[in-house]
Length: 113
Length: 114
Image (cartoon, rainbow over all chains, first blue to last red; front, side):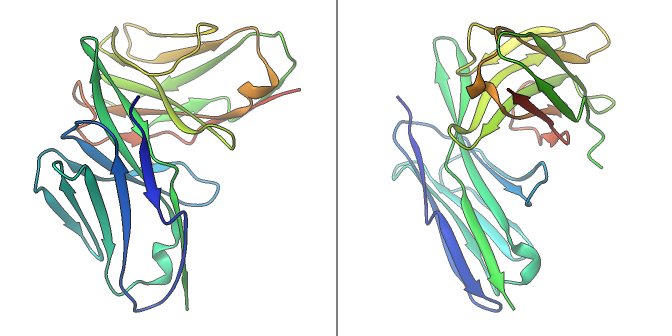
């Protein structure tokens, strides 16, 4: 069964610093999604990565996908307080003529001023 | 505001009962996705409908069912409720058949089973 692991689970970082969140998955997939969730709020779609080597950037966040390594990264550049949230990756898995999405455990990011 | 609406916002019920959660997608979106978020299970994909037809299925329990109506709103029915069904239920919508198209999430329905 497909497993999706994120690390770290918790991340506390200073403003202005860089850091990377990792998303590893256990079976073949070439579609990966990143979401953001603010405390007590709903989810927001951040990035859709559709192929090996895909890289997407939005502001201080950059996501990449390496399907051979079964790894996606979410890189944070010069963190600001507004980036404090929980970040989820999700992998799309084809199964029995249909497909489903498996989420990682989430990484709770806290950016300290 | 994502444009996706969910009702009710909160629901408190008892074990063994049946509830219906409702989702209205953004105007023009044909896909509706349902997700469950709980402390125990994390975030789980339940099911997706596209233009009235089931398109993708996750680990949705047999006690749960969903449908999408001709006006594209969707309902998630949860029956024989158990304490473990207490969770936040989100729906999302997208214009196309797959999540490769950006999804827009509703505010969620918080279900508490006592």
